[in-house]
Length: 154
Image 1 (tube, helix red, strand yellow):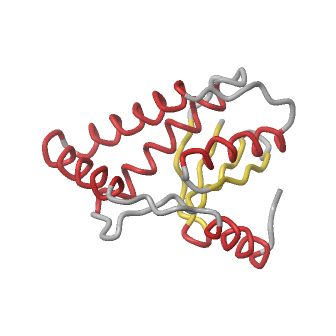
Image 2 (image 1 turned 120 degrees about the horizontal axis):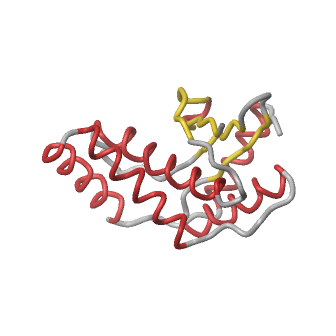
C-alpha cells in the first residue's frame, strides 16, 4: 500500500478539496486539552484522550473486513465522516503500520495538541481494529512525511 511522494501529495490535495472548516470546535478541544494537562498532568490527560478515542470508536463501530485493503477503506470512510483525515495501512512481519494524515489542527495549536490528538487517534484505531478480532495495542511511532503520524498495531 506504499505510495510515492507525488501520489501522497495528490491524495492530500484531493482530501482538502472535499473538506469543510471545523469552525471553533478545534480551538475549544485544544483549550480543554491544555486545561486538562494543567489540572491532572500530561500523562493522565493523554490516557483520558486515548479513552475518548476508544469511546468514539465504540459509537461508530467498524463492520468486519476481510482484507487489509478493505480495512483501510472502511477506516477511511469513518475518518471521512469525522472529517479527520485519512490513513494508509501496511502489513509488517509482526504488526500493521498505520500512517495517518491530515488530522485537523487548531489555528494556534498548543504544545499539548500533538500528544493529545495522537492519544485520541491511538484509542480510535486500537478499538476499531480490535473490533476485527484482534487484541493488540496501538503504539504511536515517530511523525511521518507530510506531517502525518505513524502508529503500530501489534
